[in-house]
Length: 238
Image (cartoon, rainbow, N blue to C red; front, side):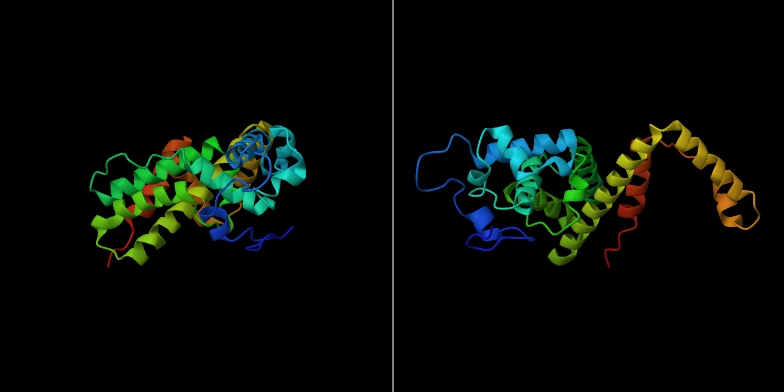
């Protein structure tokens, strides 16, 4: 249902979404708001996944007619934009930085991971292009400030933040999938037997050596930290 500014697969234009008033200017004051609609959509996604977030379900949650929601979010893509920025408001933006840009960047990644684990739908929602809203911009501003001591120019700092966010989203998506798989012990045992057989067949010596190496801590937090350290410590600032 296109509106002025355009909508559809890519949602409404950023100007319409973020720079224009959020409440209708005419008619009776509604009994709900864009914030309430967004919060209801987030709650649905947290409880049941993104597939549960439909305009009809969200309308039922706020006690509104489906058509009345289109003044606030004309399609699901626009609603996803609102949801991403809404949960980004949970990220701290005023805590002091240490001045050690690698340490601050790692702290930024840990904050992102915690947010995505609280909202498991977020990695998938970030997989397509999103226009940063006010909360997202505030966190981006802090991340860019954290990177200033690196000496990199603004474009490079933007690229590093995008790279970091993509890494965190991909890792958390995998982490969530692994946690779900672990709830099926039969499947996990079958996978272990399969890898043991492959390692012993003589055709995969590199894999056999890797599987025989001393194990590292496998807790989700330890694994994430290890991968993150490799990424951030290896960033080139030339």
